[in-house]
Each structure stands twice: as C-alpha cells, then as structure tokens.
Image (cartoon, rainbow over all chains, first blue to last red; front, side):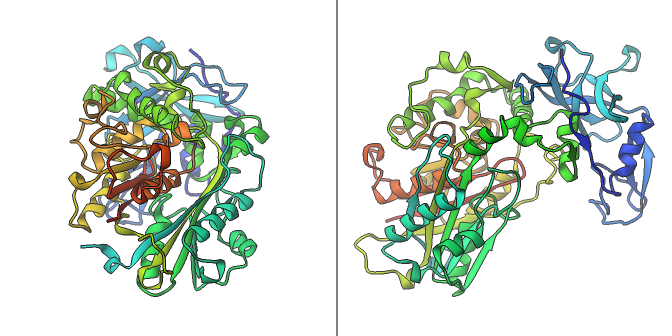
Amino acid sequence: MGTPAWGRVLPDPSTLEEPFWTGCREQKLMLQRCERCGKLLYPPTPLCRRCQGVTLAWEEVAPPYGKIATYTVNHQQWLPELDVPYVLAMAELDIDPHIRVTSVLIGVPTSLVQIGLPVQVEFVDAEGLRLPVLAPRPAETT
Amino acid sequence: MSLFNGRAVISGVGLSEVGRRIGRSPVALAAEACLAAVSDAGLDLRYIDGVATHPGEFGRPGYSGAGVYHVKDVLGLSLQWYLGGAEQAGQLGPVAEASMAVSSGLATHVLCFRSTWEGTAQAGAGSRGRLLASDHLASGENQWRQPLGLFSPAHYFAMYARRYMHQYGLTREQLAQVALVDRANAALNSNAIYTSPMTLDDYLGGRMVTDPLCLYDCDAPCDGAIAVVVSDRAHLPLSPRSPITINSVGTGTSMPYTWDQQPNLTRMAATDAAATLWNRTTLTPRDVDFAGLYDGFSIITLFWLEALGFCGEGEAGRFIEDGETISRNGRLPINTDGGQLSAGRLHGYGFLHEACLQLWGRAEGRQLPTQPQVAVVAAGGGPIAGCLLLVHD
C-alpha cells in the first residue's frame, strides 16, 4: 500500500491554526476546548461553535484514539509523484465521536480496512514538518 | 401558491458551444450563451438590467473565468442590480437571487449565467491533480486537504458513498444506474460529450478512481456556458410562448462547511435546501414530472433523490436499481440531456437548460413522451446546495 507524496503540498496555517501544526511537530494531537461549555473543537475556530464562547484553550488529545467512520482507496495518479493506491479515512475520535480527523490511513492492508476499525493519530515527517496520519493502534487498546 | 407572487419567470435560455477542450475564452463562451438567451427571450441587450452568476471570478483556473464585471463589459450592459459570488445557495443560487430582484422591482430582466472551461484549464496544467495542487502551500480549508492526501472532491464523495453503502446496503450495481441512465439519455443529445452506449459490464470494468467511485461516477470536465433570463412577468415582450414560472427555490443550509464534520455522513446540505423548497410551495414531490439532479459524482444524485423526498432515507439504491424508474420513460425521468456524467460539467446549468426545454416542449429528439409541467432542478454536493421548482402550464 502506498502513500501520497508527503511534503508535495505543505500546510500554510494562519495564527489561528498554528498551534495545531506546532502540536504535530511535537507529535501531539492538539485541539481547542471551549472553557465555557467544554466542547472540543476541530478544525480550529476563533469562537466556540456550540456556545459562541471566546475563551478557547489548546489541549492534547491523549491517547489520540478513534475509529474509522468511512474511507476510500485512492487509485488515481493525481500527481506523478503519488505512490498509489493509498487509503484515506475519516476517523471519529473516542473522546468525542462528533469530531473527525481525515487523513491517510497507513499500516493496514487495503483488504483489511473497514468501517469501525480502531485507529490512532500518528505523525509522519514531511519537509521539516510533521503531518497527522491514521494508523492501527496496539491490539491491547482496542 | 407561487413564491415571488408569481412574478419571477424564465423567459429565455441560451447555450454556447460545448466541448471537451475548446480553447476559447470563458468570457466569450459566457457572452455567446447570454446573447442566445436574450434573443430566445425575445429581448435585446438594452432590456437587460440585471446580471447574476456563481461563483464569480473565484477559485482555481477553469472553475470560473467569467464574472459579472467582464461579462457586463463585453455586453455593454447598464445594470440596475447585479450579484456574483460563491457564498450563496450553490450554483443555482443566482436564479433564486434574480427571482427576488425582479419580484421586488430591483430589476426587470436578469441574465443568470455560468461559464466553465475546466477542460482547457486542465489540459494547460497537465492534469486535474496538477491544477488542484498547483501551489506548494495550502492555506485555509485546503490545509486539511492536499497536505494530507486529499487532492480532489472525489475523495470526500467516495467516503460519503462508502458510508452510505455501509449504512444502507447500496451496491455498485445500483449506483451504476445513474451513469447508465445518463449515458442512454446522452445518445439523444448532439451536444453531449460522451454518447457511445455503456453497459453495466462497461461500468463495472471502469477504471477505479477512488473506491467505490470509478471513472464513470465522475463527471466530464468541459468548456461551455449556459445563460437564462429571469424576468418580471409584468415586463415580458409579446410572445406566443408563455414563460416558465419559478414556483419555489430551495436555499437553506445548516451543514458545517468543513466537508468531514457534518453530524450525519449520509446527509448533505441538499437536505436543508430541499426542505426550504417544499416549505415555500403547495406542490409536492408527487407533482414533479421531470428532475435534473446534480451528478458531479453519481452518489450526489442519490442524496438529492432522498433530500427532495422522491424516496425515503436510505432507499435511493432500491429506487433506481431497475434503471426504469429514472429513465426517460419512467415515473421520474432525470437528466434527459445526459447529465454532467455524459453531457459535461456545466455546473448545474445543464439541468436548468434541459428542464426549460422539456417544459416548453422544445427538446426535439429527446422531448419526453408525456409533456412535463413541473420540473425540479437541483445542484451542489456536500455543504453546497440549491434547488428550483419550475412550472409551465
């Protein structure tokens, strides 16, 4: 199973999203939490989408566990440097299933990918940055 | 009951040259369609006092190249009212906005157009992927996409389709019917991009793009433009042909704009748009004789069938599986021009153009055997949606 060309396109965050990507560099999944209503928020937002609170604190989601809500096996050679096929998936987080992290799923044979598969967020190196990916999690955690 | 006090009508339609890679300016294509629509309405350019378009000059090359300003200038228009932009009820939003403009007296005849030249733009970039990832850096919404391997909207729609299959048992054989019915219809449309016959085996043998969507589930980028004239009924020129009434418009939305965070992965903004469409009319889904349902990716058509109430939630696969129900001889004929899968991605306006021709009885060799009087046209996928209910009697 392949992977996209990591680093071919890199994130260019504004100050709003910067803490998320800084977290990735430290191999941490960092999300915002509303200090007023307690809602976990992703993608980054200037105010709480549930209660419109403006005081949002960054916190690490640890362990960054979730399960596959849906997926696709990409076969298309969108760019010459892509290593296809690779799997893309949306993972709903255990800590709040309403939050989904969408990225490449690594380390699972295509034939074994299925909805409900337990995964964790890991990080891959890309041109001096790290990008979040989904990977199977240790059996004893599932 | 009709929205806009029955004042908002479609008085003319126009289509430019359409092709895979024409290499013409998108402004020239828009102007060609606009001139045809104005003539079709029995008007001339002096009467056009409004222009509305989606998405305006916005986004990547090919997605749009013709906005209000350039088209207004080449047509020499003097406007009372205009609008262009992406943040509205999808591709068909301008028709809803124009309906408000003419019924409130802000304008009397509004040109609504869409010009696309994705065929030529992709050829220039080298590939669709090159066009989508032409920058090394991705900001805004895109920072969650290309850096993480999502190079196309196809990826989101494939994931919606996979979830729908998991939840409701949809099969690829059922999904195929959208592409097969479109292709059969395209054989009757001399402007369609793909007209050669296609069988279920052809579909199932089609190259996989991003599982479960194969090549035939993805629409055909093309160059072309379509325009319609939305008029105030009180200011129509004398004509033997009666106009088409814009009976209702669907403009609602509640879904998060981030494509992966909506609460329910088997719903799209289509559900919100359709709910507002039906809340604003006394007509019901049972009154509809023809439907133009967005098929940028085949799965979107299934979402619209359910959103508009033609079948229940999770039932779209069974609704279309015989291929008959949605065929030109069926209970709910759809996409009689071939849809975007076969006639080309005219971004929602192909359905609108076709609906008008069918309602006027002007679809020639592909005119439906029973003259339709009520048509629904729906465009958009994911968080983007808008729909129209058109009546001609």
